Every structure is written in structure tokens, then in C-alpha cells.
Amino acid sequence: MSVAAFTMSAGMVIGTVTLYTRIPSLTKYYMSELKLELTKVVTQMVPAKIDDVMPEFPKATGPVIKNGLTAPF
Image (cartoon, rainbow, N blue to C red; front, side, top):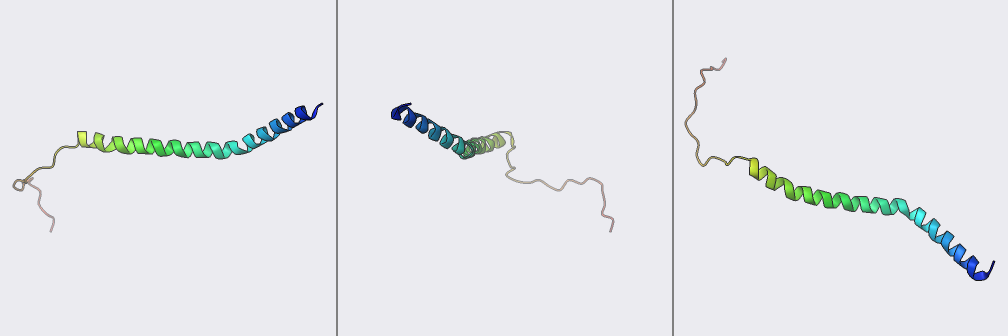
């Protein structure tokens, strides 16, 4: 085996080991980025959807409505 082939093999082994040891941290990083982006999208969508279905607040109130119930005291 020549020196060049040994150097390439050693480089491949080192690169593979480095990649496999970094996979958990890379996965964790990209998952946190994905959660952040999804949170942003949902936060932007929710207020618009709530505003669409909420009735408008009244500008004034009316008189008291009597319901026939009396207080026990």
C-alpha cells in the first residue's frame, strides 16, 4: 500500500468518525431551527384567524335584562 493510499484511507476514516460524532449535535441544531420557524409561522397565523372569528365589541351597553331570579339573601 502506498503512502498516498494510506493517507486517503486515514483521511476517510477520520472524516467518517468526525461526521458520525457530529450527527447528534447537527440534528439537534436543525430541529431547534425548525421549531423556531414553525413557531414564527403559527404565531403569525393565529392572531389573524382569531380576529376573523371574534365578534366586534359593542360600542354601548343596554339596560339590565331581568331574568326572574332573586338573590337568596
